Length: 64
Image (cartoon, rainbow, N blue to C red):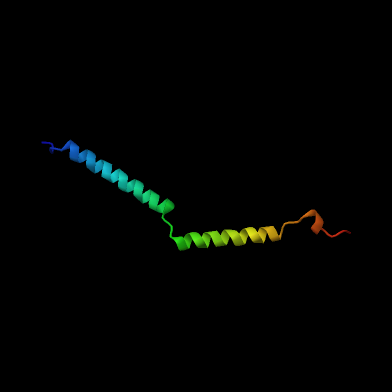
């Protein structure tokens, strides 16, 4: 014989699992600490400055 299932409880449990799953995904996507964000921002700034320093401009070229 089949088990009796309370549909209201089953719907609530399914919704809870979906919310938990969505929360876990968001924690992975957006859950970075302020220090991690600062490190990434600093790294990007240093890379941009290094690239800008290597850029050739028409006035910077030596005339042969």
